Image (tube, rainbow, N blue to C red):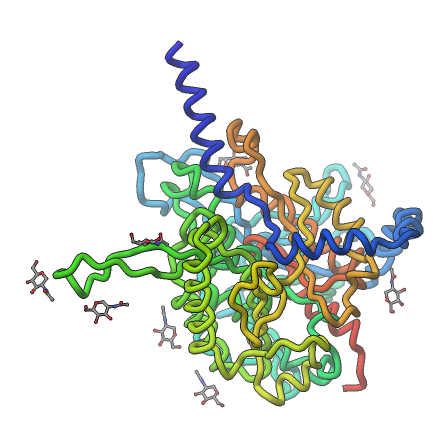
Length: 509
Ligand SMILES: *[C@@H]1O[C@H](CO)[C@@H](O)[C@H](O)[C@H]1NC(C)=O
Ligand SMILES: *[C@@H]1O[C@H](CO)[C@@H](O)[C@H](O)[C@H]1NC(C)=O
Ligand SMILES: *[C@@H]1O[C@H](CO)[C@@H](O)[C@H](O)[C@H]1NC(C)=O
Ligand SMILES: *[C@@H]1O[C@H](CO)[C@@H](O)[C@H](O)[C@H]1NC(C)=O
Ligand SMILES: *[C@@H]1O[C@H](CO)[C@@H](O)[C@H](O)[C@H]1NC(C)=O
Ligand SMILES: *[C@@H]1O[C@H](CO)[C@@H](O)[C@H](O)[C@H]1NC(C)=O
Ligand SMILES: *[C@@H]1O[C@H](CO)[C@@H](O)[C@H](O)[C@H]1NC(C)=O
Ligand SMILES: *[C@@H]1O[C@H](CO)[C@@H](O)[C@H](O)[C@H]1NC(C)=O
Ligand SMILES: *[C@@H]1O[C@H](CO)[C@@H](O)[C@H](O)[C@H]1NC(C)=O
């Protein structure tokens, strides 16, 4: 009997928590309005029918596009805790951020082909992976998890570029490791590494300068400010944390690695003003949140990380999408109070980012060249743009980025949702008014959390990240605008985006 009561209590608690935390609607008020409106505009003739009919042909076509061998590295978001003593608060025996190696080749590998992992600092080959099992002649899997961690990097110096102009070896900028596909003749067919891409827009500026952000493929992070490093106690012992953190690199590092779109959520909380203990004084502070869960940093701290990045670069444009305002806003019944908070918010954004802001224009986005000429490098998406309640607004703010969100915990449903949505012409990248982001991650359900179906967001992210190469480099490369992922180093998203843009905007330069 007590056991049943206990279970019921747990269910009620989890449902309560979850309805406020991970499971709340991802749509901003603007989006709800927009979606309702766009229902009226739905094409009579679904342009995707044809697309779907040729689905399999196309898949084969993309596979055949693979004319070169490719090898690449990612960072696993999953930590294998088998054998770890739960009472040991020191995580030294755990392999956190394990390197992962992936390869593709148009032809099957030949006996004698192998993949080599080199250490960057001294070029010593520290691991080799055969590709054919000599006993059975079977090809080994196209993915390996390596027994080495990719440690957190200090990305202070953003000056280095990956341009090959100055006869630099582009592999000079590799971090920690270089991976190579070596064939049996000893030739390297493909080589790559994890590197900073702090200046990728600058590097392809000549190609993209006459285009708009909505035409580019842009790598992004879902819930960018919900970042925290892995620790056993935090992740294995605390259900809420397991479903709170979507990233483990700081906002600054996300930008330095090449992320240019960030999904942000803000809330306001009371806190004591510690400098004054005579009058018991509360002040309202803006916090970065994952919906009902407060993250580790305030809005001001988040903005400071962005500014640090902006000051160290010249041609990088960032989209900050204030996609949801939660505690103190959504559900705040006192409209004057909510308005006052939004005024303070707008004032803070102006103060901090003022000269960098891209002013809203009903005519749509200016070209990237125009923006850079004026050093306007921050686009603010604002969930309350055009809100029916006429909430405070700024001439510098844009509508929020449209989220294409499948709201499913099943990979196959996510995939078919993207298939259905991503190439729809009404929302395609050449529509200059709208930025749209594929939310390429799974969303947990209450039952899934209760029955521990997914373990946590790290496992769910890994499941999806494995597919980015196939999805965004080949299958949907023509239609993709923004892709917002979880644990972004777990996929090759940034390199895929840069390569897709190089393809899309060919120029003589
Ligand atoms: C986790 O580690 C254990 C022991 O080291 C191993 O047997 C198991 O296969 C690993 N699990 C995964 C999913 O890699
Ligand atoms: C390269 O890094 C490894 C691992 O950190 C270290 O053991 C080795 O001594 C380094 N080699 C050089 C030449 O610095
Ligand atoms: C593997 O292939 C080689 C030649 O390519 C052949 O000699 C050998 O018998 C094959 N082994 C098996 C187990 O099929
Ligand atoms: C990162 O490197 C810079 C100089 O390159 C140094 O000033 C700073 O202290 C380093 N930060 C950390 C956390 O190591
Ligand atoms: C980067 O380049 C700028 C301008 O060329 C220079 O002022 C700055 O000191 C450089 N930073 C580092 C860390 O080298
Ligand atoms: C902060 O406290 C004041 C006074 O109790 C209250 O009016 C206000 O609503 C609180 N703000 C938030 C965000 O909870
Ligand atoms: C905190 O209290 C001090 C002393 O009363 C005051 O000068 C300061 O402005 C307060 N800070 C905020 C953010 O309200
Ligand atoms: C705050 O309290 C401490 C002791 O509790 C006292 O020493 C200090 O003078 C107080 N500060 C102010 C500004 O009243
Ligand atoms: C993608 O766009 C390119 C260039 O416009 C075109 O050649 C190619 O056929 C397109 N691919 C698909 C699958 O639509």
